[in-house]
Image (cartoon, rainbow, N blue to C red; front, side, top):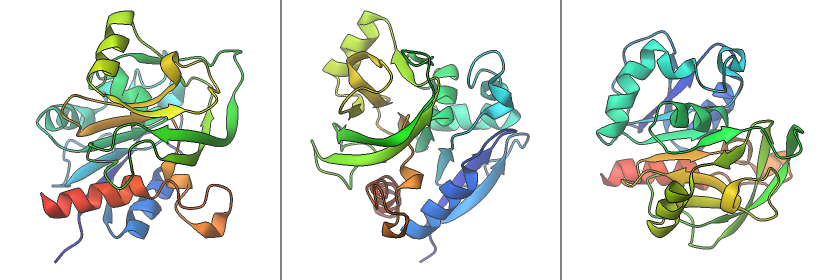
Length: 226
C-alpha cells in the first residue's frame, strides 16, 4: 500500500519546509513539495504549512501568503475537509485566510522567543492529535516574535466551549489569551500551532526528543483509516 502523501508548501521566506518534509518521511509518509505560485495541490492527502517569514512578513505575518496562487486551491479544499496543519508562520497564514479565527500579534514584551516549551495537549479528536492522550504534557520548541494569540471575547468563549483549543502553554511565554498555543476548526481537520513539532521527532537531537512526532503519526493513521 502506498504511503499517504502530505504536501509541504514553500513560500518565499519559508524556513522549515525541509524539516517538515523530514518529519513526514520519518513518520512513514511521503512529503510532496508544493510551491506557492502553483495552482495544483497535486492530489495530496493532507497539507503542512511550515514556519518561516513568508514574503518577509511584510504588512502582517501571513498577510501576503494568504493571497498566493496555491491558496486559491488550498482554502476551498480545507473547507471541504482536507487535513491542514499550519505551524508558526503557517498558523498565522491560516488565520489570515480565515480558515481559523483570531490572530497572532507581537509577543508581550516585544521579544523574540526561542526555547523548548512545555505544553499540554487539550484536544485529541483532531486529524493531527489523535496519537496523544487528553491532558498529555509535552515539550516542543517555539521560535517566534509574533506568536501571541488574540481574539475577541466571544470567539475565545466559543473556542473554549466547543473544545477547539488544541494545545496550551504551560508557563505562558508570549501573552497568548487563555495560554492558547494551538486551535482547530469545528470539523477538526484544520489545526494551527505556534510550536514546531517538526523539530521534535528524534531522540538524536536531544532536548524535547520525540514529543512532536505524534502530530505526524496522527495524520498518517487517520489517512490510512479514512
